[in-house]
Length: 376
Image 1: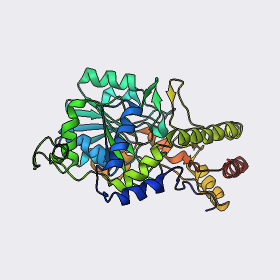
Image 2 (image 1 turned 90 degrees about the vertical axis):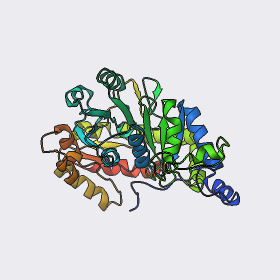
Image 3 (image 1 turned 60 degrees about the horizontal axis):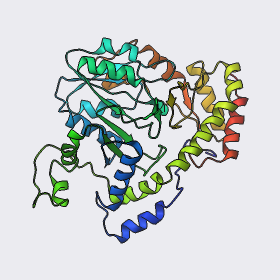
């Protein structure tokens, strides 16, 4: 492809920090660069504790362990999301209950949320799609009244905000993704953000295979042992070194991504209106994270032709999530056609345009021109 959907970015001192990590001979987890990343995330977001993990999926798994989810517990997740949002809790024996999304932001529809809560509901997992905040005031109000925990899937939303408050700071926990397609990346990686400090010590134990190893390295115990269930969720300090280089460039990254997002939105507005194509909606009280730019085409057939036409010009535009409730596993949990009509509709029509921090003005102009040439 002449213009890929995503391209690896190196914008700062990533290579130099990797060399330092190698020179330090500390490639396992919780080394100096891991601690730097923890401190930077905690300070910039105002969270009680940040813990790097091997993936966003593993951060969500840790949340399920920390909440002691049991077989038969129910977890409400949007159907329009990545499989990890449901799978992390299904691994604990919990049953995912699929919620539909709003037609404007494609976030979990808070107006349909309360009807899904039963006596078995333990958790609500809002996903900040495309880095636009869910309606957290309403979601938290419902959760508090019904005695249900909230864990944010903030894979898209790092450095976005809702009513001036950083995404990822509303639920008892939230997860971050540092996958190669995300704004800030180390190839594969994630983080668990802890907003209730009562969970910090146990989170460290679960992350270290169920041992009190972290307390041992801080000199708080003279030996460490197995004290709880857990797994190996610690990111290598080598990856943390790369990630720290990216995090140090966060303002530059976010500024450039906002420029790209704004250019798409402005330059395609007239074409979209004329062709019956819907552009992203960002509520006035949300400051989005500029994670991706999508278009909602009039139909599946139009989307297919659109993707093919751009591909013929060397431009890789892609669709996104398939409805989880209609997947093979989703149907095993009771999902069926018609359960989430908005999800079923937008999943067929959504297409994402190329979007990466190192995208040049010339590359974006090529994409914009190709899009404008398309007729629905």
